[in-house]
Picture (tube, rainbow, N blue to C red):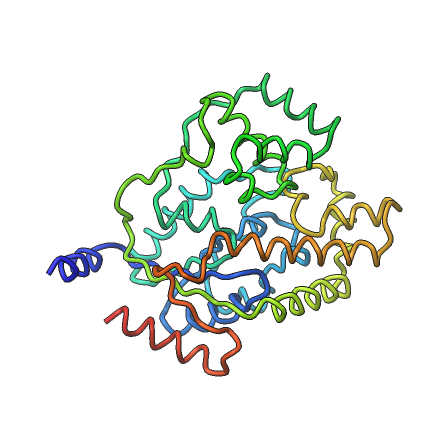
Length: 318
């Protein structure tokens, strides 16, 4: 009886379909097919896709793919703008409401776990005002001792937060440390849900065996360089965007800067990118767990994957 009541209540909420999974699993093509089939619009929850001019290294959907249907939160900021988690959350919630009001179906698509959960679980981030003095100290320590050292300090204070924040994302590491040192509590314990989610949510998870994912990652990186990744990074530098910007911490961009500066060979950069991206795939598994019963998992290798997911969505829509 209670389960039936919950289903009725859920039907009164705004519908939202999320397509999640690790890097290179095949989310883009499936989400395009589903959006076309169900009169939907795609909202990117991939934090790397916000920035204009950063196309190849972020595996941003091509112009042809974007033309297949409306996309949101892609190319919304210059590389030197900061898009915080809170700003993304507010914009995503506004766009979801707008899509629903126009009688269309919103699809939240991406592999950035914290951005996905912030929207679907209604996070209420800790309200801690920026402390410029503390930030300056932390930034100076990072400059003197390095990203890895700063991340190690976060791990000592909050291992859960450190596990989920990439050491290369210095801005996020510093923010976590700022909150911990200001509040005297773990950063990972301070995000609270606002309450019951406002969405009637269906989460579709895509996965592949880890060795196959690694092969796809390696192939994608080779194709990025063939498509002109080094030129893309050079154009960003020529446009005046500094290599230490938060946006330039995206996978692959630091390595390309090192190649362009003569600090690393192309082969070394490719090897490092592949290793770091594989590590990122493992990190994504901490956000999207195989045993999470809220996620409907599908094997992306299946030839009829679209038919399977289409059937799941049709049943869910009733």
